[in-house]
Image (cartoon, rainbow, N blue to C red; front, side, top):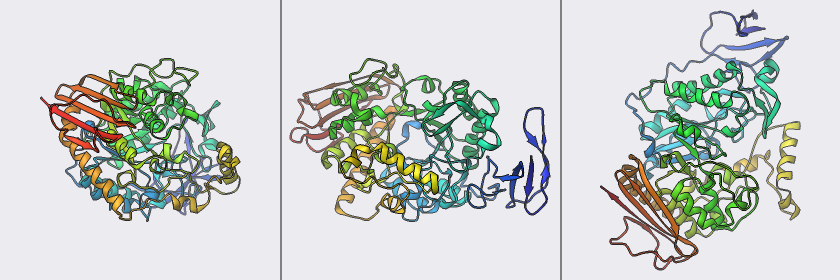
Length: 546
């Protein structure tokens, strides 16, 4: 193996006893370099910046010239109100700097954290980001490394924490040269739904990803990371690796709290219970809300469509719905008891990039259900004490779809198109076209519409009102431990929930399709949407601080 730097001749690298190849040389920031294996040039798998695409040389870059605002101390996790966004479609320009210009508006509405979908460099110009192949390098279409730092700096200046989605369970199909350079990085006996499985039994592999996580936190001053699909980090060494990531992050002394979030379909408490991970996405809450409002019962909605209101009550009382108990519509029980975990460790949502974008046409909930019903679900999300997350545009009642898109050519493009059609064969059989993920128009349709309208203004007012209530009445509660919680159905499509904390209590009465038989309360609610006594969709919330 050798390395070529700038226009100089390749320099030989020597393999040490630990298996790593090394050499020493002098170079200037900005110079490009490549590794040479069997006379073929490859980018650095840990490249911080590429000269152009994922197939070409890497560039030396430090970021030491960026001037950070000095005063950022971040927020405790109980104050997180997450706003998930995709850089390429969040604004018309689709760049880090354009996203930075929107941070003041999000802060005024009451959002306290953004969760950015993956920005590690992938093949082509368009994509969700989950097919990255250079996990240390920001995608150049979005801007430079310092442009990303500017986004983080601007968000934090507006009181908004920044969490980045990081994919550690697989690489994308085009440009992942570790397969060629170091095939030992992968486990030949296992595959994920997205490609070859990574071999986490190897210390060097685990350290590669730990270094990646720490790089994003240190060099971009992030407040946290969301680790994608950790249920696909499996095999020997997987559990050890996730603990090592958490321990490495905890050891960092960066002058601010750092928070790790996971996506974990298993509904297990291990990571959160370790004290190393702050929270996990909770799809159970989404599924109960979605089946209640739409009546859908296909695929993973089957077990939630049996008793959606009962499930919603369980989610409000316990966090997860499926905790290892037998469930109609599910062959194998899933999950374990998680109700003892802090309420903040469950990240609830009624829309996410997955739940919108993995539909055939990427429809938002507002196109599938009554608007007042969706507003009530939205208010429930933001008044319940669990950590809430919305998907970009939800705050303004956006109807823009978020469809699946990518930018491959040749066989990769054909495989993606065919796979998408096969996945939604039922729709195709009805004569409805599945959007072509490679067509640039699919990407363009997914851009967020920022135009003003009376409907959008009404949604924005609701967002600001409910988040003001959350700041004043729920933040003080969730800063303390939950002592007890209950929720039960009152009628067929209404429920009431009650949470007791060391600092006080929260009560929510909810109509979710009918006027419920709610007990009278001693005083007017602290927050209300519609009328519990008159409207089939309505919510009222009472908070008391002791």
